[in-house]
Image (tube, rainbow, N blue to C red; front, side, top):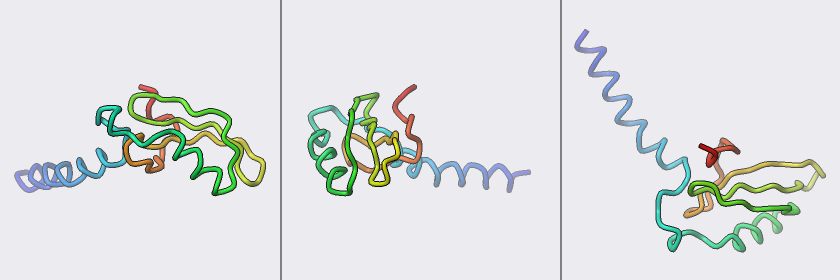
Length: 91
């Protein structure tokens, strides 16, 4: 039983920084990257940006990809790292 508890505690401790790094920014807005940088990066990759919304430390992007499909993407506002969950800031 003690091994199971220790293993669980260790697993949670190792996963916590990874989960925090993959979410929305908790930094003040003064440390965020400008929306214009994200927009120009997306345009350079062939996307047409329709709208960028700010939601709880994330930039939520509505765009058309290079294949003409509508996409909804989320980015950490501080690092501009793309997040797996397009709805990350909507909590």
